[in-house]
Image (tube, rainbow, N blue to C red; front, top):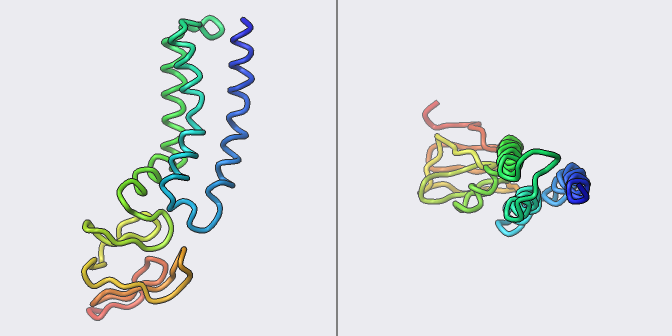
Length: 155
């Protein structure tokens, strides 16, 4: 019972960690840092580690078996991290795609992590803006502002 209360208190701190994660990723360009994105995601996943320890020690949580409590916490946490966009951010930075601003790789051109269908990665160039989030860009055929087509030679 004592471990159940300690676990419940530690779980109660998770919403505060979620709010702090917003501040950790709030600075311009911070969500493009793989180290920071993975650190924040790992910090938010601490309930899984907590229940993994309980599973190894076979400690039920308020009558729920150690295995089922681990599965329940893992499923809820995975759904929340997916819904809040942390999984997508982690996948983007691991594939070299910026979560903020423009990025170019062999598979295409991206703005804020979304692929630009009309952009050619071979001729794409960033025109102006801050280093963290430039606003204007172009390729051989199309001009972009904040990832949206503003002028195309074909129009």
